[in-house]
Image 1 (cartoon, one colour):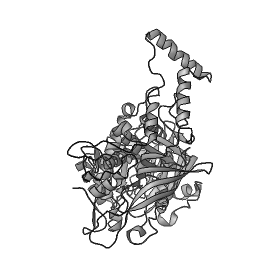
Image 2 (image 1 turned 45 degrees about the vertical axis):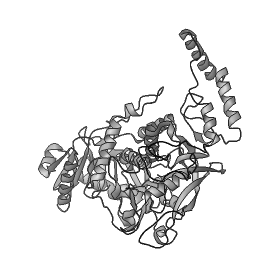
Image 3 (image 1 turned 60 degrees about the vertical axis):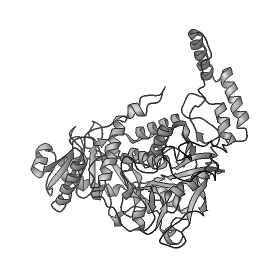
Image 4 (image 1 turned 45 degrees about the horizontal axis):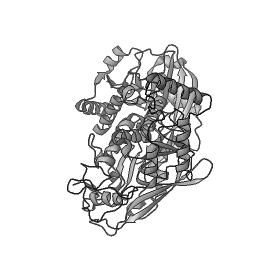
Length: 562
């Protein structure tokens, strides 16, 4: 039996009842009192089962039936002769190139306009577009099965994994307010991926992330589009430790080996022999990633994820979620405490760029808004109520700087991403003597978050001295450019929050990764998919990352966070 612990072992909610109450009020299934309300994942969470048989689905909205009328590709075979078919297709392509439309296209457009004449047709990206690209204007998605808030790497990965598994059986809508991704944490990151963590679950997530990158050319391929290329550089990570931190480093190393990471523990002497350009003063040892570590192109990763998700049926909406409507579930039984109201989110208000407000009804909500997840939670009263509802989602934006320097005499191709004991880091960028570097500030050094302006004095006073001490060739480095981005910083323990919120039957959290979200996006996307479609984690058990650890005040700290 699948049990969801809310705050203590004495207080538990039977999620079978939660899910079936939720699903009985789903957008596409009408409640049937004659059915036994029990959980059956041999079907899917969107269907009841009775004696091993699926009951007939009732109450299907007209919108779904109407969509079936225009289902299918634009170029359905309509010629007996293959030569005629080829000429016809080429003719349609030429007509569209010059702004014309074939009779079949005009017929489909006319059908669409007739069916959805009362629907909003802007700010939506959908699959099967008319113009042969992977985005086009379409109807407003007034209903959906899963609504994802946030279309960065995390939200796009969740959408991809859901659609890849459920295909056309699930309607997924993703809402993103920063449609250009100018301020998105994903594209402003350094793009590193490593297995050098102290928590086994984090290691497993990144191992899957590397597997996902390796298979991206196949799994993210879209017919008619360029082959996905992640531009992965397998140079590895090198984590250095002083005498004070060497025991922690050694303990982490043993955990990483046990989980399956390919890492090597190096003494200071071994480090100097392997990397002669490193100054080992103050360094006792280091751990080098031998496989499955390095960095990749964040923009390519995000754009390919999103493109594939769209091709599978995901709809992306340009707007900001400014309201979330929910109702109390009155048939939920709780134990060990007084009245606890479990809520179910029914709809979201989305404000479009032009200020217009629209609504989307939904059965499930996934909060993957990154640094702004705490603010979105307030729309539901999380952190503003009494008792458990008074505990906020402890995620806030923290600004981090990335500096690009030129050092013509710096390390060559053997340069990994190096992490200093003081949390400064650097890595090679290309082959022209360029390097990216930065440093996590101390609490009293945290910069303001009202903009993404870069403090170059921080480079001069903090970052440059640290990396120049570690690599003497950096003493002559010149700052070429810089930028800033946001961490979705979990103030509780700097680790992700993954899974159902205990006070909502249909709100899943996937935020708070504090700088390592892009490398874990693939694994978390798969994990949220498992929770939604199977009701539990079926590959990597991520229960320790649930919101309950915040209620129980049991932080799960990771060592060597950068």
